Image (cartoon, rainbow, N blue to C red; front, side):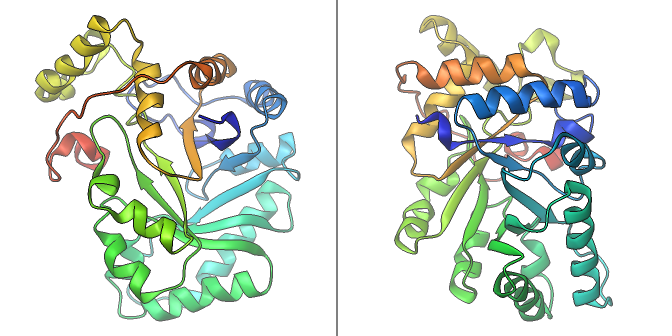
Length: 288
């Protein structure tokens, strides 16, 4: 795959995030990550208002020449001044990032549109930000690709962010990724490592993951038999689908070096490790 298609996921910059709790990435390491990324043609950052101080750290480092995707948190209150609320969060993100505009603004969870009667208003506010040229693209992130079927018929979005990995190929199997191509909607793939679950050795996993041991062991057995690292397998599976950006969560610059190296290697055909749509292993929100 083209290294330029990688986007740096910044959740680790503000949160103790993922399967392996290693703390939060400090500014010194963020500088190393972004420096290496830039030298290798990577120009996109994926961040969010909800990643605590991630955006503030990026602002301190300096990201004016980066393509930035940020996200509006889920709208949980039934009665809220939507325009005031969305604008205040978006402008706070700009302030923290020390930029005057960003490339893409997404709703962090598509349920903000699916489960609210005022969803049209939410879309109009996002479109207003786009028309004012504060953002170039607007879109949303989905947890279940089936949500796409409704939303791409109802609204004109530019970007969709969806999970895709060894176990979760729903957006490809459903044909929805091809629909996005036809509609010229950019697809950003996330959860390629399933919050690190697919990279971890089973002996290193918390007991709460023991119920997934059988599924993971099948994957690990295949990687050993084929003399391929878990990382390379995760990257290789992305070659099965058309996408615009592949978001990779980074905790240190060495991890990014390994990912870039893996992208340069010959791709390996990864078998389809079948997982049911409702299987909790593909939805980190159900891990607890």
